[in-house]
Length: 228
Image (cartoon, rainbow, N blue to C red; front, top):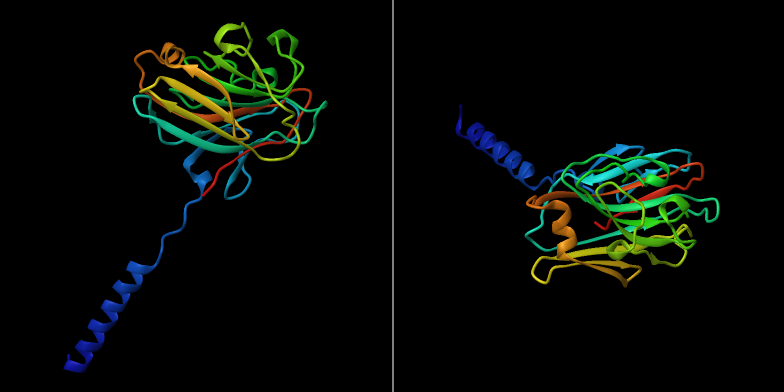
């Protein structure tokens, strides 16, 4: 091979390596970090529809990576509860659990039946059997039960959530001061002590976090959205 040909081959190889190096990989979107179950489906690059606006649906979205409860976390998302108010149901639950699956539909909110799980429910429908108030509300639920018994799981009434808008939700955990904080629309709505969290998980330190939701006889399209 002549000198000119060798130079040309070398130039082509170097150019190919340079192009391969600078060509970006396909950009991941927030929803690719989640495993979906039940009725949940990707709605767009930033959102997941947990339940469509149909009866008796139940869906969940779970982060693929577990978190360590010995470390602090600060999780932010926006929840959309649909636009049906009096005719809407049932709500969304933020969940910490050692396994990723979907619970019962209807008043179960996709959380009922999840053992060894801790949830923060955002309930948009009054189920008398669960001691729900008339208003949309937030409450701590544990071990796959959604009935309110008072004490740490006392409900916190919220303004109407079924307005079709994105409601920012932030959940923070700090094992140093032993507090689990829940913010809704930028307002601190509830704080739970470390004993409640540790009481559910015992010696289990690695858990998954996710969102579950359901509909029953009444319905709403319910979504979770994330920032890039």
